[in-house]
Length: 425
Ligand code: AMP
Ligand code: GLY
Image 1: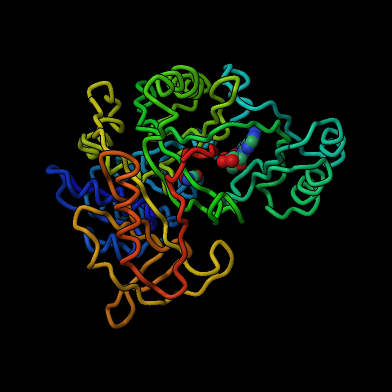
Image 2: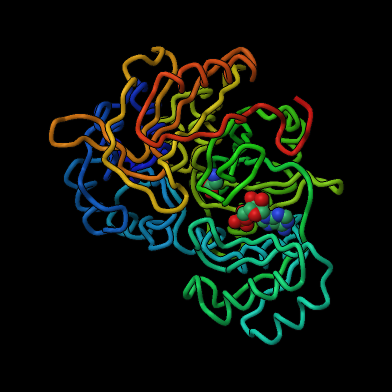
C-alpha cells in the first residue's frame, strides 16, 4: 500500500511511524510533514489546506489510503473532494465533521439523541446572551460555535467574566465568524479523559483512553495550549467505563449522524468528563487528538494500515483491534514563549542519545541549510516512552527528555505524575 498522511505535527509523525511498521506498506508520504517524518517517509511540500493539490498528489502517487491529521482540511471538505475523485480517504465528510466544527450542531445532536452533555443554550444575539448569563450560576462556560484553535472555550468564574467573554465573541468578534454563535454552558466538574474510536459509520471500535494536559504550566497553571503531554491508560477510566462510553456516547453519536444523513467515518474523538452524574461529553473532534495520538499509538498491536483500509471500505467489523498492556507517557517539548510568541531556528541536540525504544515525535521541526534539525514551531517535539506501568513509562520518558536540548526548551514536569485533577500521587 502507498499511504498519504496530511499534517505536520507530532500526531502525524506518530501516524507515519506506526504505519511504517506495517509489512503491507510500500511507501508513505506526509504533506507537508516535518524533519521527523522526512526520516521515515517522503515529505510533500503541499499545505494541508490546498485540497486540489493534495488530491492531485494522491492520484499521481497511487495512494491507497490518505489519512487526515488536522481539522482544517476536514472542515474544508477534503473527504468530499477525494471521494468525488474516487480517491480512498480516512476521515469524515464536511457535513459529518460539523460535530467538531460547530459546537451548536454537536449540542443539538446530543440533545436530540439523548447523549449526556452539559446543559447549554446557543445564542446569536448579544443582548439575549447577556440576559441569559445573568440567570446562570457561576462558574459558567462560554464557547464559540466554530473553530477557534483551541481557544474558543472559556471557563468563567463570575457572571461578569462570562458577560465579557460573550461580548468578546458576539460583540467584538474576536474569533471572527467562529464566534457568530456562542454557547453558554453549565460548568461540569470531574476528571477529563479523551476517548477516540475508529468507525466506518456502523462499527465503532474504541481506542485505549488517554489524558491530555492543556495548560502550559505544572499543576495546570497558565494559559491553554494545544496540549503539553499525554498518558495512556488513565487508571480512573478502566474497561468498564470505556464500554459505558461506547454504549452511551460513541455508538449513539455515530448512529445519530447516520440518521441525520451525515454518515461518519474516520476517527471520532470524544472529550469526556467523568462527573458525579456519570460520563458526559465536553466536545467531539473529527480527528485524532494531538498529543493523545503520541501516547496511544505506541500501544497499538494491530496493523494500523489494515484498520484504516477496513474503515474506508466499510468492513471494520472484520478487524480485531488489539493493544499492548503497556502504559505510555508522552511529554511535549515547547519553544520559549509558547503558547504566545516564540522564535524558531534553534538547533536541537541530543536526538541521537535517545533510547532506541523511546520515540521522539517531531512537531515544529525542520532542517536548516546545513542539514541540522532546528526548531520551527511552538510545540517542537514529543517524547513518548512505554513501560510496564505509568511510573516506569514516565521515568523513561523524562530520562530521555533530559538528553535533548534546544535554546528556550520548556516542558511540564508533571505529566502522568498524578491522575488528572486528583491530589494523590
Ligand atoms: P472544548 O474546546 O469544548 O473541549 O473545551 C476546552 C476545555 O474547556 C475542555 O477540555 C475542558 O477542560 C473545558 N470545558 C469545556 N466545556 C466545559 C464544561 N461544560 N464544563 C467544564 N469545563 C469545560
Ligand atoms: N488534545 C486535544 C485535541 O487534539 O483537540
